[in-house]
Length: 192
Length: 104
Image 1 (tube, each protein chain N blue to C red):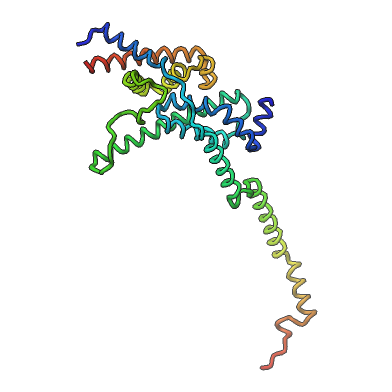
Image 2 (image 1 turned 60 degrees about the horizontal axis):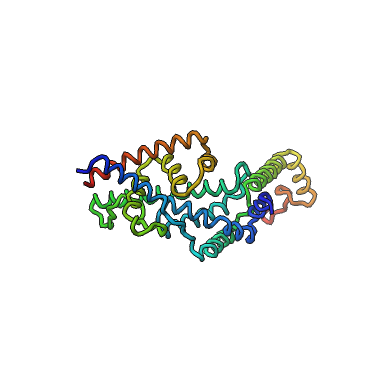
């Protein structure tokens, strides 16, 4: 079955088409979500939101990009949306705690409890450090760095997803690495 | 105080951790849970009462109602209508001034 027929079936809401979509994309979508949100339960929730969004918006899909690129774009946007919401909740809880309301405050600055099942136990501490550092990057740099270094996508693929040229992806990646080095250097200086 | 050489090495090893992350398989129930949610949403959308009454239909209905009203008002205000009524009333002796009264 070619992609056009497959997309038509998705637009008609055929259950078999969605079953095939999940077979083909569930692992990739989950992997992308887990790269941004290093917590299994949260990443699965976000991945589910991605498929719901595909289901709702497939009528608007005009075929200007490949279906996989479009789904990757939704995965990235949904992950960022999740992080923004969690950060807002944290800020809200912090404000409440200032004004004396009894909301239990998690004092860590990270948006979720880190629980990435793919990280080896001996690397747990270092991986937490790098994930926290990535979280401090500006959004555009964070997206490019995460998609390339954690999700393993090529610059070309990232360019298609983020609708940027390969050279701007390279430049964002370069700045992200520089900024991460600065953040980590500060962290290790203060640690000692 | 850590030397800059040590810090540089620590930064490098921290970056290297990203290359050691293993692939994680999605939960075996993910597909079923997601399909169930998608089709539960679909049912919700289709059973929502006035889903069929699209904006296009709403506009067409509004135009029809306006046309009928304008036509009705036009018919009501036509002088011919009044004369027809008077003629009708006369014919069937319904006219108010021709009604015999018991008190006259």
